[in-house]
Structures are given as structure tokens and as C-alpha cells.
Length: 382
Image (cartoon, rainbow, N blue to C red):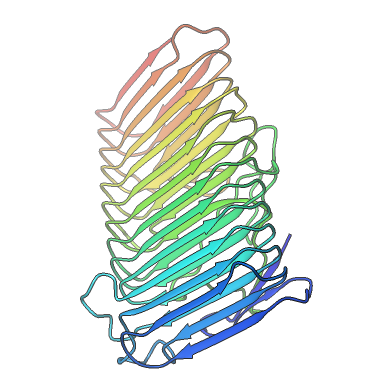
């Protein structure tokens, strides 16, 4: 597990604690507008370090429309790209960052303020990618091809941000972080990140936070966001959190875990808003766990599972052990489980709720629906 050390709101003081290796070191700092920076360590030895800083800090209105590229080919590399654009220009994107690591045990940290684009590709194993973006219309893409990977995207204080994490390998079966929950059956994996509002990659009061060891986390604060996680291996963990109790609306969260979902966990939280959509797809050999929490009205939650799976949908509930947070109306839940020995729990508060559960062509299935309001509909097919 790596310990990643951040100042709570600083964009520049980003350090990664890792074993010291004798590699090459590149530092690029550019102040101003429309800068281009490229650092290529493809043919360097292991333990390379790249630090690219474009813009002085988040208050610099003249910083923007910059491009940064970092490429590393060895093992145990670290790349940090910081782009600050305090004027929040209308161009899309105002800053662009591209990072490519093909070794193992590498770390990429990207911090951007403005309307930005970040693209990270990591081809080895045991690698970490962390992206923090503030303001509107940001795009972040993380692609990790190896095993035991960690991807984190935090998009704060904006609207219409898009985040995507794709992981092709297997996880470790256990995840932990600043807030460890023990909700899932057969594993201690549920990790509700719920990053703090108002900072790009925040830390605790001590200035440090421990991420890891593996998994994919997307945290978006605001409305009209899209968060997508795709994982192809087993023992994976995925967390999409949207809203952070800020009343966000029109968010879309999707988690897909396939090709063997033994002990895979998928968590989607959409808190405090309405007209949000959450979808979890788990396809594989079984033992997957899906949890969706929505605290608002007119939300939709979908769970599609193949194998010996468990699905929990809470609409109008919050907390590790969900408790009613107040009546929310017009929510819709749809659960489709095939194969055998599946378990489904749907809980809804308020009026005009709908819960539809399909557990056909199987034995040993269990379905529970709890609706607390009036004019609700509950349908179970087994």
C-alpha cells in the first residue's frame, strides 16, 4: 500500500511517499498562457520522477490553455502534473494532461483547476492514478491494464463533469480508506470515499490520507455529472459517489464488473438530489455485491446481476446501516438477477415508489421490499 500525502487544499504540495530509487528526475515549471510541456522517460531506468507545473496557483487568472505530457517506461516511476487556471475560461478544455506509464508500481497524480481534460494510461501492475479537478466541464479518463491497480477521480465544485475508470485486471479482494465500511457479505470491501467539499485532492486534518490498496473511486460534487467504472477481473472494488449532500441533480453513475465477479463490490451513492440514475452490472461467476444509496426524489436505480449475487437498493436512506433520512417521493428501483441463490433488498421511503424485482429460472432466491409511503407499487417475479 502506498501512502499519498496531500496538503488539504494546496494544488502544488503533492508528494508521493515511495521507496527511493536511482532514477532520472525531470522538473518543468511554466507560468503564463498556452504553454506546452513534454517529459519522456521511456528509455530511462526505474524510479524516474516527472514534475510538471503550469501556472502558479489557483488564483492566477492568466494561467490556462496549457498542455502537459508525461511518458515513463520503467518501474516505480512517479509523475505529478499540476495545472491551475483561476479565471475558469470558457474554452473546453482550458488545460490538457496526458500521462502514460508502461512499467509497474508507478504513480500518477494530476491536479487541474479550470475546464480541463486528463488522460492517464498505465500498462503495468500495482499502479496508482489520482486525478483532482475543480470547476466545470472537466473530463478524466483512467485506463489501467494490469492487476492490483488503484484509480481515484475527484471532481469538485462544478457541473457537467465526466469521469471514466477502466481496469482490466484483478483486485486484492480487500479495500480500505478514510472511511471503511463492512457492509458486504464475504468480504470487507465497501469503501465510501465521500471526499471533502471545497478541495481538489483533500487530506485529513493532519494533511495525510491513505488510499488503497486497490479499486476504483469516483467522487463528484455538483450536478449533471457522469461517472463510469468498468472492471473486467475479479475481487474488484468500485465506488461512484455523486452529490455529497449538496442537492445535486441529473447525475448518472454506472458500474460494470464482469469476467468473473468473485467478491466484487459495486457502490453507488447519489445523495441529496433528484432525477439521478444509478446502474450496476455484475456478470460472472458469483459472490458479487451491489449497494445503491439515493437520498432524493424521482431517482432511478438499476441492478443487473448474473450468478450468486446480492443487491441492496436504498432510496431515502443514509448511513452504513441504512436508516430513513426522510420521505422522498417518486423513486424507481429495478433488480434483475439470473442464475441461483440471489438476494435482493429494496427499501423506499415516501410516496409513489416503484420496486420491480425479477429472479426467474433459479432456486434459493430471496427478495425483500420495504416501502414506507402511499401509492407505491411492488412487483416480484420468481
